[in-house]
Length: 457
Ligand code: PHE
Image (cartoon, rainbow, N blue to C red; front, side, top):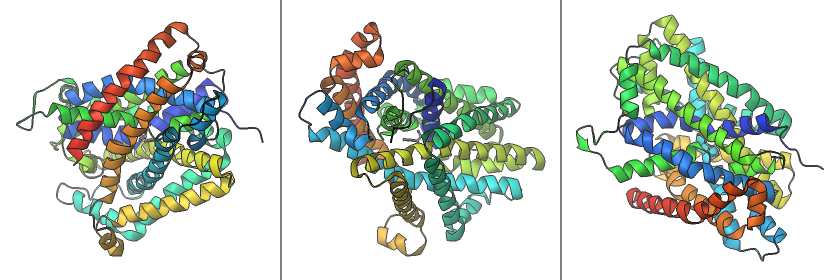
């Protein structure tokens, strides 16, 4: 069977931007910016996205377009095509590690996306009238601790993802991305219009972009902020989970991957910043703490939606959660697709069967994440209160940087210059790209990775 490819440039951009723009932009970017004091975090984030993220996305595209059959085979396929004896470490750290991490990510991603789906339904059927400063937190924990509801939401989300996958690359992934991305942009602009009327837009701008040396009365820990900014940029750009390698598999040789990658980085960064410019004016106008952490979207914002009055709050709130759901679905599709392509490419079980297996596995691990929040028996087995957070931290700080490092080293030192220059199709760019990917990126990523590890333990 001939392999499916995306139909053209717009399709590759929509699908890849869809993979990149997700909960990372709308849920975690604003709360990470908030808990890291804005300013420096945002500036470093933008710098890392372009200076490190962009060349890494290009590198993943190079591997994907030349490698075929998903991340578990891509490295060896390239080595064999260059008549090199495969070095297993590349496949293990650049293929297996990201694919296993993707499996972990899909499980907790669908839990959070399930919450967004739940809040979207609350917006539609009930409104945010019950979300006051005293009980919004309790309402959120009631939702996530109600095993029936939260499991139903998580399962619905992952099954929606599976259904899109089963429709295939052109009729599923590409179509959904082409529909969801423009709607997402319209919603975010409508919400931005509202944010401009809150009277706190200036405060939000200065919080996000003005570098400050102190935060909450303490001196800013610059290293911690840099580590958080880099890991956020990687996660948000879908780097280090082999997602772009997989979409590279489906990208035809006619496309210009450096231009496509640049468009994706611009779109992803823009949406993260726009999400910040939507959320922070609402937060400041309602005197809510900007450093509230992961609960910002699900606890703080509903209070603000309630304060807006029943009709306006309901419309704005429902639109906001629809935005989260749309962003999440195109990302979860890419994570699941990447597991499926890789496992099917390696073990040839058939795409449909593999997709169903991976989905069931993701559901089970997702259940563990949910129940590890403190209810039921599995909590005692795991012995952790917030497995979801820990899996998130672990992939962000450990597996993603290792995979990113492996990617740069592979493209920088192992892939022949001939391939790189035919991929980039621009001599000057190739002459800049190779030394940059060999010497600059590994040092940056390596240093921040080590600091990240020190911070983690
Ligand atoms: N980039 C996505 C987000 O910002 C998450 C993601 C990571 C998707 C890795 C695919 C691969 O939410």
